Length: 433
Image 1 (cartoon, rainbow, N blue to C red):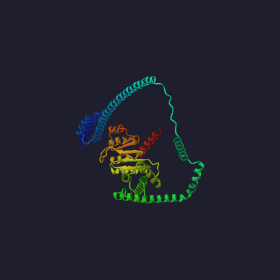
Image 2 (cartoon, helix red, strand yellow):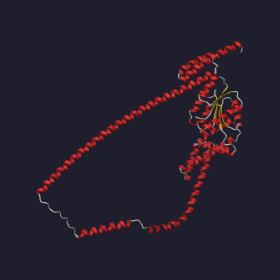
Image 3 (tube, rainbow, N blue to C red):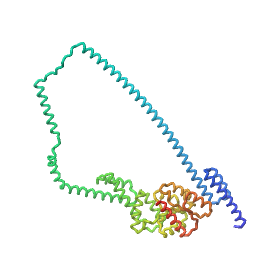
Image 4 (cartoon, helix red, strand yellow):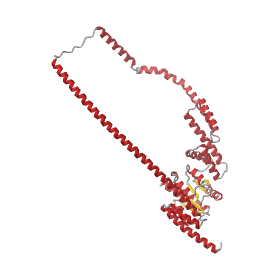
């Protein structure tokens, strides 16, 4: 490039960077459409400027988030409207019930008043009738002999019935239960034999489950055979659930061990293990438990920090993995942010390192960072950006998002290790505080 061309290139870059600063200010002010217009001008002036595409990605992400918020607000408005309608309906129903209750009470008062008047009238009529006729003493009729005998016989039968229903005395109960207590030792061998038979059935069923899960999935034909076997061995649904979980996790542990001892590099190992976790339907808790057990068996230190590294350049990724593993870290390596984001939904690494320009990913470094921070369990995990760009504005922009640090390529292995150790030390102090 001639000095004249170089001078023109610098002028173009300077003019484009000035526009990009305006774009940055518009984004911060929430003027996304205006920012997009300025960005289009910068693209015309300097179409090779990598920062333009970073800002373009940023604007697209913010628009998507704005659209989501608008939908959420609209949905919230609809829910609030529905809630108000339900509240109004409840109030109307309560008012109707109140009016009905008052009407019922008024009716009851009127009926009571009417009955009171009728009773007073009857009392008045009876008083007038008693005054007109002399009072006659009421003498109860006498019972004959047969009636008296019948009453005595009925009473005796009731007494006998009550005595028969009384509980047996304590002494009698003890005597009655004594033979039963003596027979208990005779039934113990039978109980032991029953338990032994149950254990054998469980062992047999679990062995069949292990065979079914050997390839990481249970086919419909195998499910049908297992149902028939459950009927034959009298395996309950609860027992099947427990044994199936045990067989699945043991099969996954075996596959995990084979992968860990296969000699794969960190990137290949991460990809295969993630695939196995999905295939065997292993929960994050179960994976952590199995991973810890396998690493202990093979002498791996459990206090090793686990790092996530994302870079679409194979050579750079391999170099970083070698440096970090040599520095005493466990590494999960990925070529795309999409794969890393899938793993991060269940993993909690000690630190995340990501390149900014991830051309083979659907989301770039800045958007990846924001999606990571939206995961509650990763909100405080240290995050370091890597980039070959040296522009101070982009460094400031990356840190402005909240990233913990920013390393510019090329960097030395010692610088990378020292930076990571410093961030981990600070992160550990924050957790203890």
